[in-house]
Amino acid sequence: MTEAAGKEIKCNYIDKQQQVAMFDQITSAPIRSYMESATITMELTRTEKFAAQNVLRDDVMTVVGRPGTTMKEWAENYFNSIK
Image 1: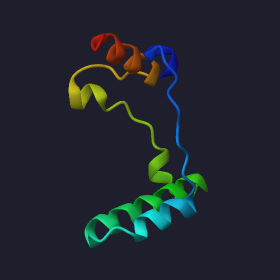
Image 2 (image 1 turned 90 degrees about the vertical axis):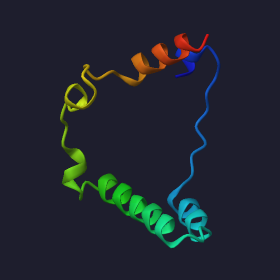
Image 3 (image 1 turned 180 degrees about the vertical axis):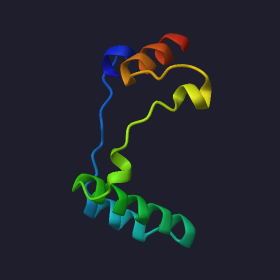
């Protein structure tokens, strides 16, 4: 993305403990539960215990009517469109 944007784009990594601490502060029960479920899903995927997340399908054509793109292709198209 940095290459496509022409400026440095940084990732602010937050580990699992930091995520949990942030999610614990969410007062909305449905939103907090959703975020907690995302943490569980990421952990199961990381440890290769959530096989459903490892299935690869090209649904982009079915859903949006065009072939899928890589992150690089998406970033180049996006950043070129806003110049």
